[in-house]
Image (tube, rainbow, N blue to C red; front, side, top):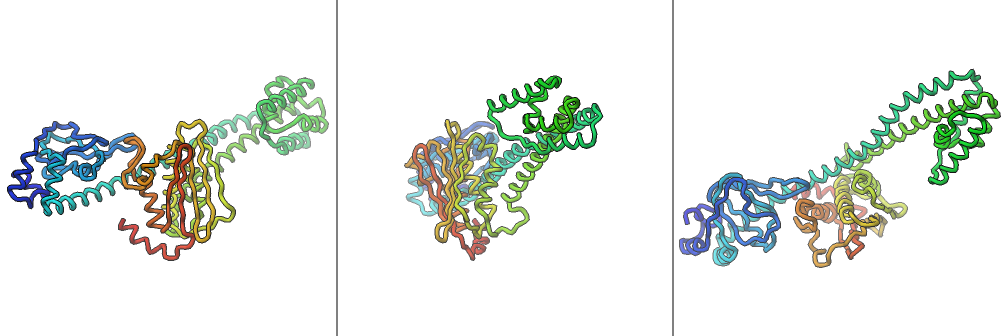
Length: 465
């Protein structure tokens, strides 16, 4: 009774009520590291910590996150009893601890008969909910940032490696070009003619069969003229887009006696051109990714601006490229989709959450597909994100925007992604979001007002949420 009386939840109870509670209380002893209960378990008791420290932990991506540390006098485990839902977090003893276990029936009776206990419980729950929600919201944003960081690093790695590889090969190619140009007493016009053939040719996309046929044709042409190792030269010539007609024209220009050296010079020139082109393409890709990242974050821009939603969606697709690899992403954007007054970086969080969930939904599908659609409709902009995954069961569709609700396995999600999405669309932008789902098709519908002249009025409210 003395221990219970020191807890705010029970401080206002009379001796008779305390005695009735104590009749149902059992003592629990935990050693350091012992688990009191695990996330997802059904709760049957609330606990008062008599001594020691306990950690409240929630599984997130590949690790456990510490939500809170509870000490002597705190009550834990009551939220699952009141909501009649599984435990939303795990609790583990940090040190040797003693607890008083109160069964659900006794807690219900207490709240039914004691207004002071009800008020104390309400205050405790409100503080606990706010603390947990703030922590998980922060973790959700950090997880999203981690996903984007991993995606950007992955996307940057390929073009950066290509630039590095091509730059390394370019030095050797230039040396081969010098050797080739010095191997024959070419006139300036000859060198110019060979360079023009290499520069004028353009590589084209060829199927495997077409490429083989083209290489065979070039190899035969070179062999007939006594060119050494024509099988080595033919693939490079084909890569450069040079055909037998261009080779014949070059032969007429410089003469057949110089053709062997001319082919070597052509191969060296084409190789240099190709490597320079590869470096340019890699640098352009790097620039595109950096530009998409800057656009995604609205770096150096005001929080509220005229937002091109289509560009925001495309930037998000680019940054999530590693997760969407192998997924058929289809676009159906209407012509002339208008810009809207909005919080640009926050809208990009919406597209990130919806695309990330869609990618998870189609994972493992034989033909994964995500469809993106956008069009204007009177004074609204409509955006749809559809996937061909397994779908969301009908009986839980009305819960998917609730805090902490998730259909993913423990540790896969916090249950706040769609809740944050709902808040950004509905509260921050006065829009609407809904979902239609059946096996093989899930579609999220987002509606955003095109004109929001007083959208800045939400700024202070957003800071308080």
